[in-house]
Length: 302
Length: 302
Image (spheres, rainbow over the protein chains, first blue to last red):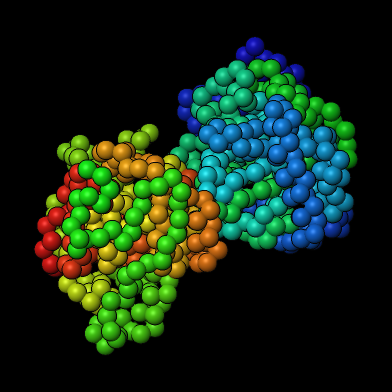
């Protein structure tokens, strides 16, 4: 099944990637803020403008230290449970075999399910996307101290479009930090404004790419020249603050993180909210969809 | 030849490492500031006190942008010269085969030789060590953008003592930055106050360790528990500033750096000044000395 062939006319591929040997930047066709004005939710006009322009929002200490403690205890319990370690939803560090990520926590864990429905978060996301939303993906990321590996630059949307069949850019990632993010422990780095462009990556997706890509990405990897252009336009930021802070970032915003040799681990909970008007179709790369614990296909609005 | 056996009584091993399976921290036996008072050189009492307490000093923009440009052009010329790339003094990145370090530049290159004798630098070093000094090691480090690898935590003195036979802690590393150091491009991280302790590492040095250790250190690696103790006592700092800034750090100060996925490379010139009263003896690990381009054995005072 070739590129595009699986798609009906209503799902034209506006963001082709991995179809050519030459990477290129194209302009985004979709809105960033889907609403009309600011009086429909908790975010004010200044915050909406900032999000539209830069592709992210940072809320320092949105959760209390007590709440954070509760989530961390749950994470610790999950990470050390033998059954969890063997579950397909769990990704281990290649060398140390420590837990790196656990997927689908909004369905398998009651506490994290509640958190994914946090009224403050959902109302802001709903305001930005101007529609009801469902969880496209959820996970906990654990980046250990001393040996935390880097995550190379990527646009989540590029992968979700190619490998999951997400048609348009109408989703927002929400990262809730469970540890302090500082400049030493490999914090999430964002390239502001990069969400305005789609980087068509070179190469072709191999079958079952997800089995290796969650450990080390080899396809859908941006090229140096276009990354340089994006950084020239937007710079790099690494929002940092205490545990319990929240970062929203637009699904197409370029992000990554350096390694972490500091003794301080970095953990976060990650929910992706997608508009119910942007539900998944067949993957644009032409292969079979990834497992539903990575790309949810139950489009149940929150 | 076993540990210590090669040493005369006058070279008792005050800092044994790699001799046991259990790592441990011991207190430093040597002074940090070897002088008596501050009126013997350019550093004032406040700077000397800071250095004694924290083990480092940072001089923002000690060199002008014009000087930096000249050194960078020289580095670019060296990095692309085929003969340089094949020389034993040149260390390549394991994967990309790009130049990572070039050793011995104070002997092989006239411009860098002059720089190593910079009057301002040498007078400050001489003041701190209260003796004439010679260059124990010199190199240029090039940490490319996008794919700069991490350097794990280490004390240089631990290696120089074990593998080069440097008897005591009476040497200072001087790093001259050739690119901006910022929080995104994997800057040098230091653990302040860690120079007051010697971390006896576990394990034993294999023969010809230097051939692999300059790419990836596997022996003389500090353990997590003692690193955590050091960081609890001193924290972590990453002095950052424009190209042309200079960092002095005590030979036993624990330091390292995270990877660098930013597009901005990080380059620096590195000179180690050792006291002429602390010249090398036989390596304390009992093996043959490393090549002289890594550990100079011509003790000619500057």
